[in-house]
Image 1 (cartoon, rainbow, N blue to C red):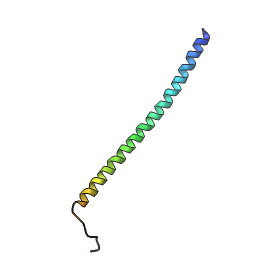
Image 2 (tube, rainbow, N blue to C red):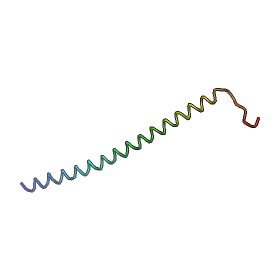
Image 3 (cartoon, one colour):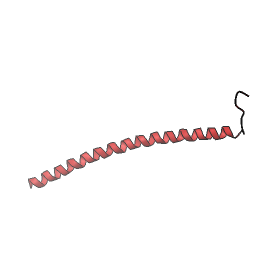
Image 4 (cartoon, rainbow, N blue to C red):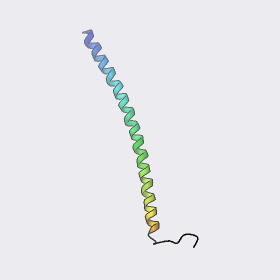
Length: 64
């Protein structure tokens, strides 16, 4: 009976360690996802600005 209890306790400890590891990975991925979303939003705004700026036709360089 003691061996079974020890085995269950070992499995529980192993499962807890894995859960903590996975939680860390998920947290890191969540932060990375947020960083990438912010970057995509900035790039979208930049593209819109570039497209809107070029709609005025060809612009002469500032030295003309």
